[in-house]
Amino acid sequence: MQARLAQDAVLPRKAHRQNVILRFGRRYPLGAFGAVVLLVFGVAAVFADQLAPHDPIANNFAVMLRPPSPQYPLGTDNFGRDVLSRIIYGSRTALLVAFTSSFVGATLGALLGVISAHFGGWVDDAIQRITDIILAFPLIILALAMVAALGTGTLNVIIAITIPMIPRVSRVIRASALALREMPFVEAARALGASDARIILFHLLPNVVAPYLVMLTAFLGQAVLLEASLSFLGLGVAEPTPAWGLMLRGAATQFAERAPWLALAPGLAISLAVFAFNLLGDALRDALDPRLRV
Image (cartoon, rainbow, N blue to C red):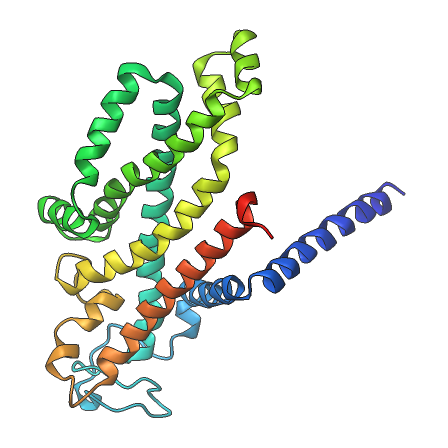
């Protein structure tokens, strides 16, 4: 009897989740399309070992610069490596860097913005002046400078992309937290003797989730583009690690006329990923902001 009641309680929750997904797809078809594209890239990244038809780093000079064929659907590069396999494995690098840097940067930025809004005074002034200094530099320039200082490698690329994102998220979250700080429920918590940490963690942060998610998805696309840009310039991941930006470097420009698939395949992958993240981010912004609901 108890098992049946538990099953009856689970079914409405599953139905509700399905209805939410269906409503989101009908209301924001472009956002749903972006989510489907990202799901495909995610599956490719997780199951790359099973999906890739060839070893992405094994050289085979006997088949170098082969055009697309049934054996090599996207052709081969100047080392005889299968381009499709490198695209599939490259999704691991792109999504690892994008999700890690965006999540860490958005989370630290949200925490910093809430702290700045909550305490105000000299704490707010100090944080905002440091934020202004960092925001004075373009994102790509700051990332390039940090990679040049830290060195190449996946971890250093993640750090270089994460740090410039923190002040950008902090500024947006601070604006939302300033309005929340004057709300009655925050004043009531303060009157009851709640500590600053409790107010920040249990009253302010949960109420800035909507802008946090919007900023997170917006920066995911930028992170993919930044990682590809750094790899293209030789400051990202190093050979023979499969990476979309790295695939555009060197052979793609050297053999552009003879083997155009070397540039088209990774370029299309980067464009689709960035486009999908932007579409999903716009849809989430419209769905989570009540002022934009019709």
